[in-house]
Image (tube, rainbow, N blue to C red; front, side):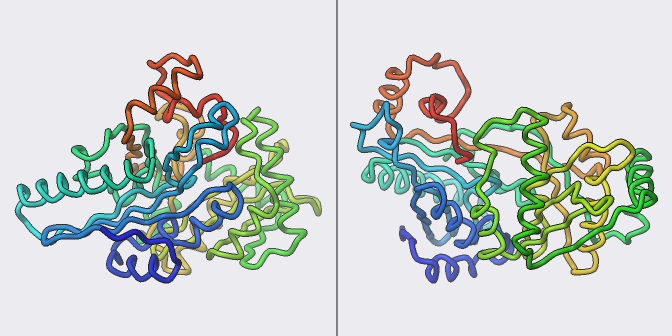
Length: 352
């Protein structure tokens, strides 16, 4: 097993996993969180004759939570978005693969215990379905469906598949004279416009504080990643803005916000413009993500653009049950609560 911490080694290892080439696995994506959330970056590479595995995660210092200041322990998490282990199988023998995964689990658990890692939380990548093979390694849980637009279809077919309401909203917004801006290198004013739209959406939805990001955090997505900003102007005012981040084949609908104005629908037009951009630039998919569940309004809205769904799973691992339970006991929280890791619920102020 090899521990990876440098950008050069990390991205060299990823060359072995080209079929999973996506922004959420890149060192640069992890670095943004290291810069802004006081965490460290670590990748684990493990191989034998049957499988290759790469798992990147963020390391959080539990002692930075005031209630646990005397605990010199850490926990692990996927950055905001998606990630998890990448696995390449080199054998067609399922029993051989299973034995290799059991060996990986032992090596990985032993390593994590030696580093005082208490537990790990993983958000698997819905498009790559990388939760498969891992039921014997992690506790895996289905969360919800997510929406994917297949950009390999011709543009007319994609448009015809939109729900009637979305088609109307797109046409109405264009008719109202709204201007679309597709921006690869946003100016400070462009970032300010995004922040205004995004924060207005958070205020309107009474969202938790952890979803309020700093301007520098937003800017770093353009400094370290390939990203795209689409804005909508109405009467010389920005009323909607969305950030998309780019993988090799997937364009991700990442962060978005808008003002509510009667008769104007900036979000619908933004997603339609992203579809056209993705087609023009040879992306295979536009990934819209999901909602809080399969029946909530956000999921229903996104599914109006496509009925191509991918399932979102999470993974949970506890390496040190004694310390995990001790931390929960200190909080006094009900152990039946499904929040994970449960002891962090008292300090749920960051997105990681």
